[in-house]
Amino acid sequence: MINLVPPELKETLIYARRNRMLVRWVLAFSVGMIGIGSVVLASNMYINQSRLHYKQSVERQKTQLATQKLEETKQRTEDISTSTKLAFQVLSRQVLFSELLQQVGAVMPSGAVLQSLSISKLEGALDLQAISGDYQTGTQVQINLADPENRIFDKADIVSINCTTATPDDRYPCRVSIRALFSKNSTFLFTNAVKNGDAR
Image 1: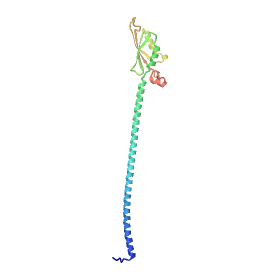
Image 2 (image 1 turned 30 degrees about the vertical axis):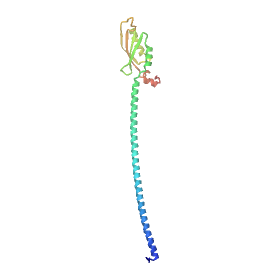
Image 3 (image 1 turned 120 degrees about the horizontal axis):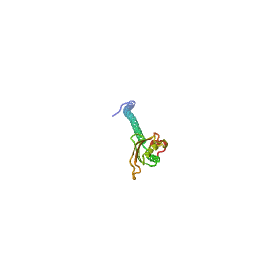
Image 4 (image 1 turned 90 degrees about the vertical axis):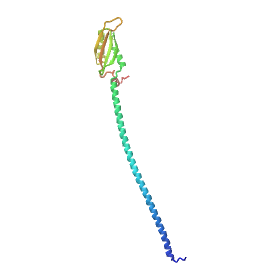
């Protein structure tokens, strides 16, 4: 087959075909770039939304933790405060019996013996029971305990003195019951001893 197309037209047709193919490739490449750009843009939007969501979630959790810690700390502080108050109330009623017995024993008159002592239901009061050889000695017990120079009690009152007939086997026929009241700054109360630095 003989080609009668002039060389210029022939060359133009070749370049036209090449241009058409090049345009197709450019369009395909552009479509591909638009697709890739859309995917990247959508991914960025998703990542930004996820990051914002997680940031808000973290902030909420931090706020909740801070609130919970505050409430927990407040509760623990209240518990400690209550425990401290309770301990102080208990200690304020504690008596240093070791020192008290020595001091009471030292002021007992000759012919009298301390039998027992117990904390009275009255706050700061003590009930003492002693035995003595006679009524006079029994009253002297009360006088010695109430003496301000002995610095044991603010006040000591005789509740009762009962004397029976003396027998050879019973050297102490009189039973003396005394109620004594501690002073507020008595060194025999534990809390006062702590304040003064004398607690043992």
